[in-house]
Image (cartoon, rainbow over all chains, first blue to last red; front, top):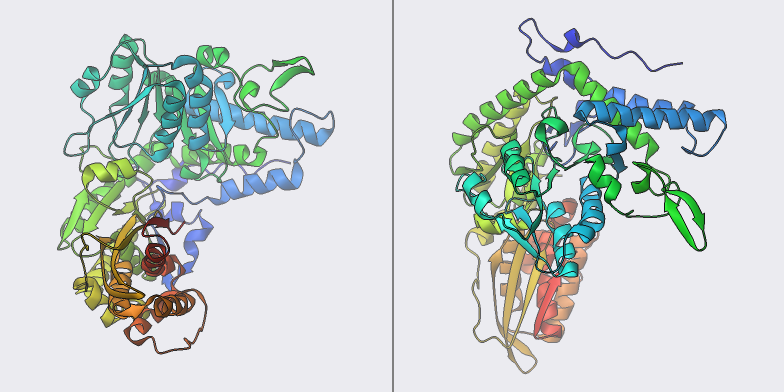
Length: 422
Length: 147
């Protein structure tokens, strides 16, 4: 038995190669439901994206036909589960162009991936008086692990300032590097501003100084093809649920030489080679960093999501999201009192905004009432909000299944907000 | 569930022109309240005269529900005793958190918050000021959080 064949690429594109978003939308069952009696316009994929049928089916197929524990049994199901799980790892490796599956570590999500690097690599590399460099626009997941590490090691956490339109300046970056900088941890794409950082240039500069770079790819992974070799990053962290896969699965990519030298993080079953009461030896990569039974079905779901994105066409998805974001930006700018937060050129399909006289939380409630789901609040980026001098923003984020109708629903609902608040 | 139940005219009015907005310096008691979910920050300061609270002021930033709730609270508690404030706060919090709760006493303008219960994501916005006030009364310089 096998899974249904991947849908042919042509089905998702029109004659001029543009994404048929309505066709994509049909793959996501949840989008057919109503919210508060209105069709759902889901504009919160930046927080968590919905899952297509192929992902749901892959997870279900595994649970109904193949489930057992991995790397343990000689029985048929355990072998099937192991081969499905390791097959998923190979799919992820190929999707991000890592050199080897030894560089693909399954974790719970971006947060756990960064914590792993802080706890394992960080404790070895960062000592008293050293510095860890981040930026002002980071998500809490790429701030707090470094804060804890620096506090423990007597090191300093330095945050790069931003330009007025929410970008990172390369010259500023250079001046912040010094002989004490041990690690640089940056978002690939800002979850609030949508700014795409010039990561390739930043990494090249960092490597001239011999400093490794971790990228938080949570907001990038669904929107562009990540090639870790082209980027040259040392670590890349991302979550499944931001890329149409289930929650509770994520990946830490790490360069093999670094991972090899790093001590284990969590310990227990599966990560060991031998255990005696006197001491233990560690399993090879990537298992050294995967203690305990992993999220097998999550990994399979993530692989199915990568397959899905490939079958739909990554370039067409990126072009579609970009077009929607441009259309939405233009439409939002016409709403009286609306201010866009984050206007960097080439930004991702994430639009943060405020509305004069209306708190974002109220915007969120009224939009929800109109069937439009957006995120409101500080977006787990309180230092960035302080920097912007804002308590909160409203944020619409776009995915492959959004259509022009969603943009229109957003604009209509924002006029409704104006109506309520007079 | 109707939006008009949440955004009643009284609430929109108190949001637009909050009463007793500001800070008593020095205050006999004060507290900070945080709602980490939405980033609301609220400061409540009190003047105390024996058992009475003759004056209350609040400031901070928050949504319409949290600002209006604090404004309505400031009007409702000024001039009341600690015991009266305790009883009143219990009634308001019950109204916000329990379905179909009929308050045992006339809550006056505070009844405008009755619709908040239908919007579970917003209950904490309305209750933050009351928790902050209770914290200030219990301990003259306190910080509370809704999480």
